Every structure is written in C-alpha cells, then in structure tokens.
Image 1 (cartoon, rainbow, N blue to C red):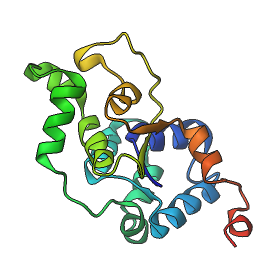
Image 2 (tube, helix red, strand yellow; image 1 turned 60 degrees about the vertical axis):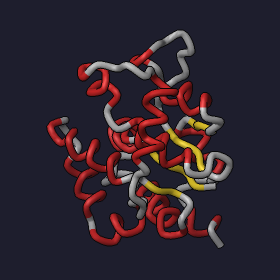
Image 3 (cartoon, rainbow, N blue to C red; image 1 turned 90 degrees about the horizontal axis):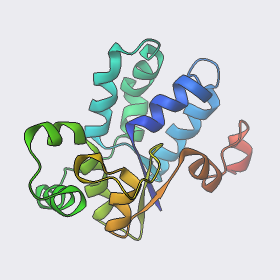
Amino acid sequence: MLYLLDANVLITAHRDYYPVRRVPEFWDWLQHHGAAGTVKVPAEILDEVKRGRRRRGMDDLLDWLVDGDVKNAIVLDEEPDPALVQQVVERGYAPDLNEHELERLGRDPFLIAYALVSPTSRCVVTTEVSRPSKRRANRKVPDVARRFGITSLDPFKFTRALDFTTDWRKSAQ
C-alpha cells in the first residue's frame, strides 16, 4: 500500500503530537518509509505546507521537508494526470464549481487524483473527518475518496498500520 499524506497530517503531527525537534524518531520513520516507497507526499501537497509558512512554529517542519535527503525520500515522483484531477473535481465535488469554490478546494483534488491512479493499492491519510452531508467545495477528503473507492485513514490508523514506535529501527528489522 502507498500512503499519500495530506498537508494537514504533517502540520498537525508537528504542531500537536510530534514536533520535529522533540520527536525526531517520527520524522526519521516517515523518511524511512518514504525511501522504502510506502509513504509519499505529492509535490502539490508539499507546496500547500510551504504556503503555510506564515503559521507560527512551522519553520522546523519546513526545514525538514526541504532537506535534500528527506525531499528525495518523501516527495512523490509523479506528475498529476489532469484528466483524473478534473474527474475528482467534477464527480467528487461538483461539475460547476465557481472560482471561489475551486480556491477553497486547495490541493485536495490532486491528492485524491494521485490515489485514483491505483485505488486498491493507494490510500490517502488526512486529519479531515467524514461529513457526508457536506456538498460541493465543502466536501471532506474521506467522503470524496470513498466516492472513488479510495481508502482514507486518519493519522492514528496510519501510524498503527505501519507500526510506528519510537524505536522503529528494531521494528523495521
């Protein structure tokens, strides 16, 4: 399974649970799985995190993300398929979104489109919670992903699925 991380996963992990400087094991673990090809961040999602630089306390996360070794390991080395992105927007959100609604989507359609390349072997990891009653640009990633047969996990299910531990080197052997 290839786990595709949403920007909110990285931001929330750093801000609330595993600050880069305080729990470097988590970030080493992500890099390890990135190098192994099981965890990736699409470039569009990386850009979304970088745009959030204005957020206080994100410098350590951004420094980690742009480190050459980390970037090589974690960034998905694929170009988006414009037809899949369009399909996600039209069938996942609405076919007639206005400019304001498209802006509100952010990079989520790209994340889902990358997973749509192989829905049975790729999943999205997001902190967003399903809200099936939401419509149009208000739809949540888990609901749009489900519409296309894509699995989505919250960060805790993700770390359990890949057996995160602060002593990950022993569990990786």
